[in-house]
Image (cartoon, rainbow, N blue to C red):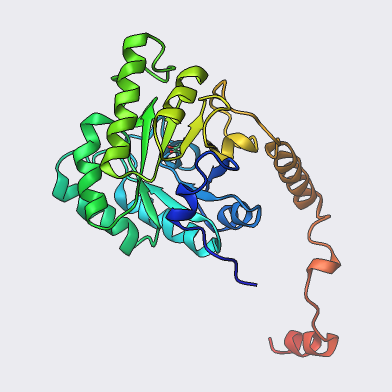
Length: 280
Ligand code: KIV
C-alpha cells in the first residue's frame, strides 16, 4: 500500500514531539531499506564523497554527483522526506548560483528539500532559496565542508563566545526560513539551549539527546566505513564482517569449483548437445 509522504509541515510539527529520525542514503537499495524502517528524513548527504566515493573529505563532491545519487535514492523512497546536501561551491559564490543549483536538485534530482552549511553568513542565501519555493535545512556547528577553517573535525561552541555565535547562527537560519537545522558536534547543553531558543526542529549529530531529532551516516551505523569513527557514532551492526566472510567463501568455492553447483546452472537436452558436436 502506498504510504503517506512526509511533508515539511509534518517535520515542523514534530518540534517538542516524538524525536525525528534522520538517516543518510546514497543509492536505491539503501534508500529502500531506510524508508521501509519508517525513518522520517532520508538525507542524501555530501558525506557521499567520503563513505561512497572514497575522497578524504566532502569538498570535491560535485552537483552532478549529488543529483545522480539523489535520483537513485528518490526511486527507493515512498514515505520519507528526501533532503539533499548542496555541495561545497554550489551555494557560496553568489545567490543566483545558489538558487539555480537548489532548483536543479529539486527539478533533476527530485529531492523534496536542500541542506546547506553555515549560519549568519548564509542567512541571505537561505532566505533567497526559500523565497524561490525551495525548502532549506540548515547545518551549523561542525560544518565538514569548511572543517579546515574550523581547525579540523573538532567539537564546536565550547567557549561562551563560540556558543553565543552558534545561537545567533541558529536564530538567523530560523528567521531566514529554514524548516529545521542540523547541529553537528556541539556540547549537549548548548544543543539543548538552541533547541529551546528556536521554534523549528533541531536535528543532532554529536549534539546530545536534547535535540528534536537525530541523524547518522548509514555507513557508520552498520560498520561499512572503517577510515575513522567519530565519538558520536553508535555502530548498530558490523555488516562488513558477514560481507567479508561471504566474499572469502565465494573466492574459495570458485577456486575449488564448488560454485556454481547444479542448482545455479542451466541444462540443455543431451540430443541437442549431440547435434552440436556433429556440426563440426
Ligand atoms: O553529509 C552528511 O551526511 C551530513 C550529516 C552528517 C548531517 O551532513
